[in-house]
Length: 190
Image (cartoon, rainbow, N blue to C red; front, side, top):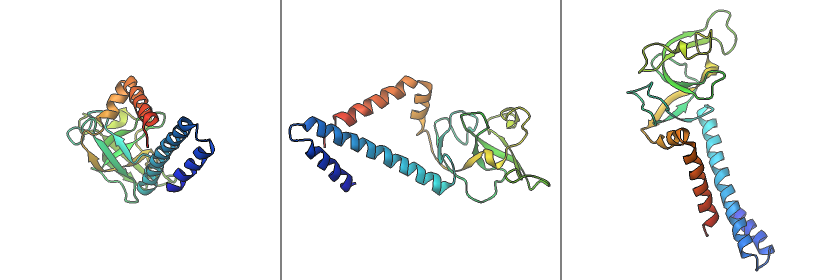
């Protein structure tokens, strides 16, 4: 990080002493780039460590109450351990954007003649729902396979994800927040 700041100072110095605003703007742009790339590196590191394509998710509905409430942040881990009934998992149905957090109620393993990745069939249900999730699956789909699962829940932070829900429900809040953060980055001084 010091070498990057040194390089920025070298480039800024070559711009000349009269271009103080240009140097400051260049420094702030590089600092913003460092923040963004650091966040991406942390995210990618979590993906590699957990084996989950999305190691952190926010509960968006009340289907898992009282275990998890709307706005809880869940931490996922895929691991090599087989899935079992009673575990809470996050899965994604083909063609849908939003993952679902529900509990496994049935697992069927090693079906004869099954293809690779299709040897485990899982049925899920929300704790606060009356019936199983077959109504949520794609038409004609009766079970989930391992390729539908994003990971098992290994921990959570209660209600911390409310900000995400607010930004999803009211998109203008998201744009306002991004604008305010951008203004802070541009106007901050080292």
